[in-house]
Image (cartoon, rainbow, N blue to C red; front, side, top):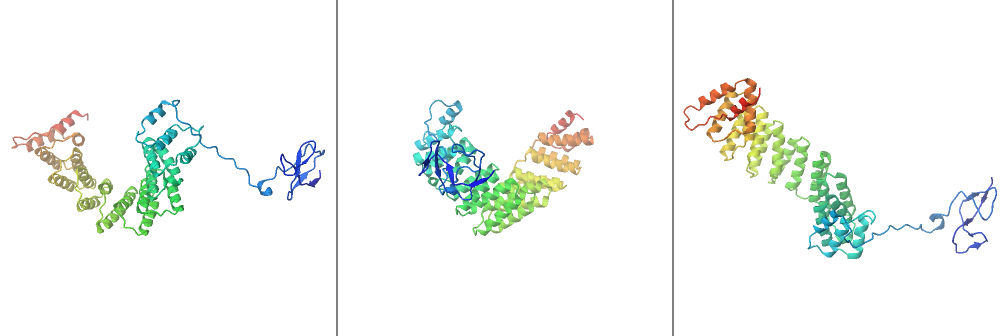
Length: 423
């Protein structure tokens, strides 16, 4: 089969057509184009290796298929009960523009178009301003959090939204609450690409998000970036980084930042102190727990029963029952009513060191102070007494302690509990 250079194509329309009695044809210049010769060549049928000329050959742009626009149809009564309920819950104070788009969003279906097409149609037809966008986002946040995030991202693309750095920070924070790390990072990159400068609030939100995700490295890198922007760090910035260290099991690094804050007379929130105290308490680091407990008081935060309980637990786990008892008495002297949890922690500390007499003395002092042993403390006593087989003996000792105290009521509830429990 031979090949022929050819510059003639069959084409439906042409500026200068050469018409024969079979179909319209026209001459069109082709570069480096060859056609295979069929065995029977005729004007009615041409077999080619190549198709119609492309845009590059013709110098004309390709015809782009335009996306179908969203068909805005007024919402009638032919909707689901769930949609009717959602529409009925919209605040009557909303503007007509906002009410219209909210109804469309609620009743949106794939057949009508995409969410981006819907919002584009709203912008074209009703010209919303920033206040309208904010009102819509506020309602969506209450109605459907994921839908709110989608609309918020699309809002950034619209000039009428007038996005500022606080808007970017807010959605980054919202993505962080949902643990959607990649989406938050995408917003941050988009923010930087548009020339919006990250400030302290934005970077603090990122540190908080990395902290929750357990990504200490990125949290540290962002914290260093925060230092470089030249703004004075506040308690939120420090607090987010301290929490990152706590979650990573590195409370000492968190405490270092806490001291750095104290030197600048910046004090963390109660929740940060409590988290750091808990981290030391759960590992039995009594010295670290006491340091943080002292720092709490220096920051002007009055310790409550839960904070005192964490300190008692730290001493108990460290095998320092005497200091656990002292911490308990200090709490009482401060005017705090001990919880049953605190009582149980002291008893557990005595049990760990097998100091039965100290535990009995502790119980008698509780009864003198009108403190009733509750369920958790009673369970510890019952377990301990059964283990060493001294239920009867303990009851006798407690009665001996009560001699001379006319109004003293023998604390028999834990003993009764021990009698009632199976061995």
